[in-house]
Image 1 (spheres, rainbow, N blue to C red):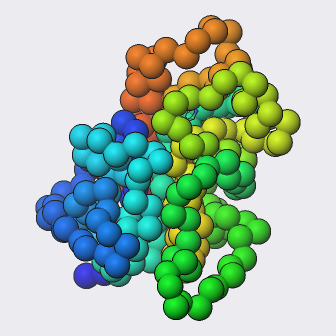
Image 2 (image 1 turned 135 degrees about the horizontal axis):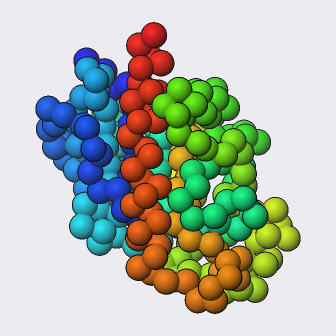
Length: 250
Ligand code: HPA
């Protein structure tokens, strides 16, 4: 049975609740090793593959993730649709802790990451359209699934991808706000562009863990609070994914 959906879990999501009858699939890719084994199983009778982006024990930092291997591994599994689940900081006034967002745009501030499959020696360079970085039809389905599941999500927002692993300064976030970023995270790129290069459908579920630097009332950001907010936001993900899979069936 082919895999209906790939899931990439971010910080705070190292195994997917409700994924049953699982097998661990180790994949070697032309780009090296992914972050860990793909956990392939079933949700409500549909095949799903889950990968923990930072490894199951959170040992792979955002700038060290082998995004190419991770994305290529899904393709090797025969998976055509992938949802990236990402912890983020909120910049926009209505994007505070525990809010869930399906972003529609990206600004990439990362550097030094292998961000294309098109840079191997002697391979033809492919330029791709990236006007709408997330697959519009998949975003629409994800939003409809959230509605169906009764989970409140914000439709749209610009994800600013930073290098990490440190959080940002107040001045950096102020600049990102001026640039038009609504959210800030460390892993949204190059994952999205690599999925596009391989022709996969890809969308992002962004889980807000904290106000970005200088956006809340509290001064410095508490790492403990990040994890508490993230746990609350993460709990909203499985019903959305279940509803998305049910729409596939229907
Ligand atoms: N900045 C960048 N990445 C993040 C943040 C943040 O404030 N919170 C969670 N991931």
